[in-house]
Length: 104
Image (cartoon, rainbow, N blue to C red; front, top):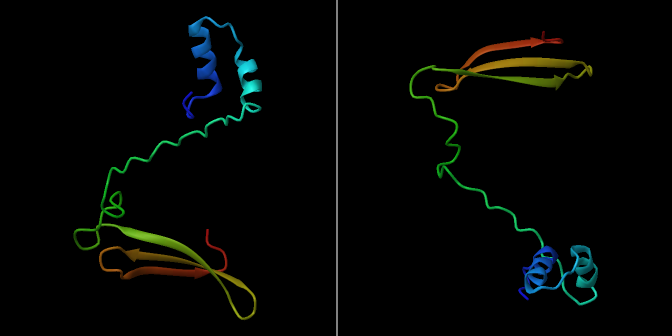
C-alpha cells in the first residue's frame, strides 16, 4: 500500500478485488495497524505577476490621482485629535490637511 493512500481509496481497492468491506471498518482498522491518515496537501499559489505590487500602478504624470489617510493623535491634555491628510502620489506634496476633534 502506498503511504499516501487514504482509507477511502483502500476500501475502494478492496471492493474492486471482490472484498465487501465498509469504509468505516477500514477506518477503524487503520490506526491499530500502524498506518497514518495522510495530511491534506495544500494547493500552491499561482504567481501571476513577478514585479512587486504589480496590481498597483505607479503614477505616470503630474497629479493623476491623490491618496488620503485618516490619522489620530493624542495631545498633551489627553484630547484626541483626528487628521485628514490628502497627498498627490506623483509629487508627494500635501494638498490638504484637516485637523479637528471630530471629522464628519
